[in-house]
Each structure stands twice: as C-alpha cells, then as structure tokens.
Length: 140
Image (cartoon, rainbow, N blue to C red; front, side, top):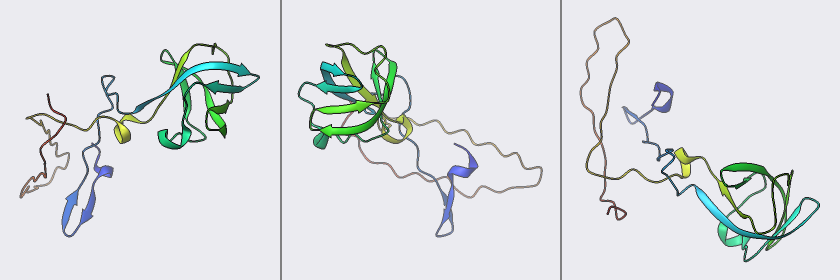
C-alpha cells in the first residue's frame, strides 16, 4: 500500500486493506451465461438477468480469459450490445471481470504480514499499529 492510500481521520492515519486481486480470486468474476445468438454486435445470452447480476455499460465481456468487447448497450433482460464481437461464437460462455482490489475475495485466514518502511532520514516514532478484524464466515 502506498502512503497515498492513507487518510488522517480523528488524529489517526487509516487505510483499508484492499481485497484480493490475485489470479485465485473469483469474487470479481460474474458469469453471464451461454451465447445463443449473435446479430451484428448484439448478443443474446441464455438465462441472462441483467437486473440481478449488476452488469453495467462499460463492463468488458470475456471468453476463456480473452477480452471480447465492452458492453455499450443493455437492450433487454437477456440481450446486450458489445463494441466488438470478434472472437465470440454461439455456445461460448461469457463473463465480466471487475477490479479484484475492489470486488475480489475478502482477505481471510489467521495471519497478516505487515512490512513498514521509513524512508525519512530524520528520527520518527511509531506509537502503535492497530487493526480491526472480524471472524470470516468463508474460511474452510
């Protein structure tokens, strides 16, 4: 975390630990479904419910970890229009992937390693390092 991630609140410097952006994180991936037809740049996806999935114009659609195109229009409950459909085929399973640091898996487990570095050449005193944690319901 960079110093820019911290904000002074009530006399303390605070920062939120970001969610996991690792390749093992899956909370940031939202499956849309299987493509049933493609008409120009309009894609019909079986069983797509845009209202319950929370997809938005500007989200990038992927197939097999390859970006296909951005959503430029949500036409109806199961139809979206993409900026391009090159590489997209009927029966492909499509999904969107959000920023893992914001919407990825929450951090969980029993340990947290913190490395602090002082680049100042003058004397600096560290009074305390505090954390607020709660039990994860997602541990195995």
